[in-house]
Image 1 (spheres, helix red, strand yellow):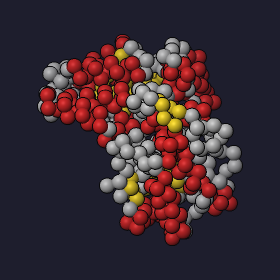
Image 2 (image 1 turned 30 degrees about the vertical axis):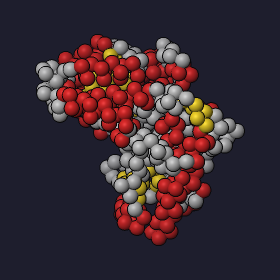
Image 3 (image 1 turned 45 degrees about the horizontal axis):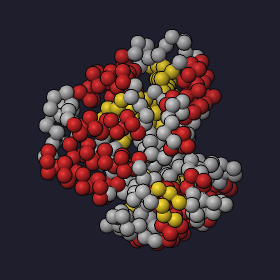
Length: 435
C-alpha cells in the first residue's frame, strides 16, 4: 500500500541513526522515564534534547512536553491566565490545541481573519496599550497549506507591544537550512551562515513545534526566553503533572533533530516531489488548492464524495489518502490531503496521478474548470492565486526554472552529489512508503 496522507514527511521514523540511538538508549535505561520531570523523570536525555531544540531555534531555552497539543494548550493557558487582563488574538484557522489553550486560560479572545493583517491591526489598535497581548498564529496551516505572514505580524507585535506565539508544527524539519521552520527559512542565508541575531526567527517570542511529523518520533516543545520557559515549567499543569517522555524517545528525537540540522537532502527532495505532484495534478485539471508549502490539498466540496474518493483510492488502487471533512474544514470545502515524502519517487507519483484521474472520472468529481465556471473556491478556479513557493528554485538547486536540479546539496556523508541523479533513482536510505 502507498501512503500519501501521513505526517512522517521525511521518513525519520525509519531513519537508521534514529532507530540505532533509540535501541541503545532503551537497552541501557529501560522503557519508562520513571516519573514526572519534577521528580525522577528529569534526566540527561531531557536536558540534551531541550538544548538541541533551543539551539535549533536560536533561543536561550526550550521545554519538552508529551505532545505539541499539550505544549500549545499548557503554554497559552498559563500565560493567558497569569498575565493580568491578557488578551489573546488568534488566527481564525488556528489549530484546536491553540483554541483549547486560549479557552483554558480564561483570557479574552479576539479572532482575526486568516492571515489578514489589516483585520489584525484594527483589533490590536482597539486595545489599550497597557493591556498584555499575545498574537497566536501558525507558520504552515495544515489543511490548506497557507503560510502565515510572520515578518509582518512581528512588525505589528512590536508596534502594539504584543507577544508573538508561533506554531511551527508543520514546518520544523521541513524548512530552513537547519530545519527550524519557516521563520528560519525567511532568512535562509543568515541562518546558514550561523548569524541568527536580528532575523525574523529571532524576533519571535515563543516558538512551538513537534517531535513527531518530520522528526518521526513523539512529543512537543516550546522555545523562547529563559524566563518565559521557566514560568511555564513552574506553573503549567500540563507539564508538571504528567509522566516524562521515555529516555529512548527523547534520545531518538534529539538524533532526528541533529540529523536534519546537518542534512538538507530529505527536505529538498520532499519539496521537489511535492512540486512534481502538484504540477502533474494541475495539468490534468485535478483541483489542487494553491499554496506555497508542502501540503497538497485537493478540493472535492462534498463530504460523501470525499469519503467515496478516499475509499476508492484505498480499495481499488492501494493508495491511502485521507478525506478531510467538517469540523476540520468548513462544510462545502471538503478535500483530500496529500503529503509526498522523499521516498515517493516517480513510480509512486505516477501511480497516484493515474489513480486520482480514474477516481475523478468514475465519481464525476468537479475539476478545476468546473470550479472556475462557478466563480472559484479556496483559490481553485481563480486566476492569479498561485503563490510563490517558500523554497525558491535557487535554494532547491533548480536552474533556469527547470524542475530538474543541476546544482548540488549537502548529503549526510558531508560530500556533494548531483541532485538530478537522486531524482532519477530510487531512494535506498531505508525510507518506506509502502506496506
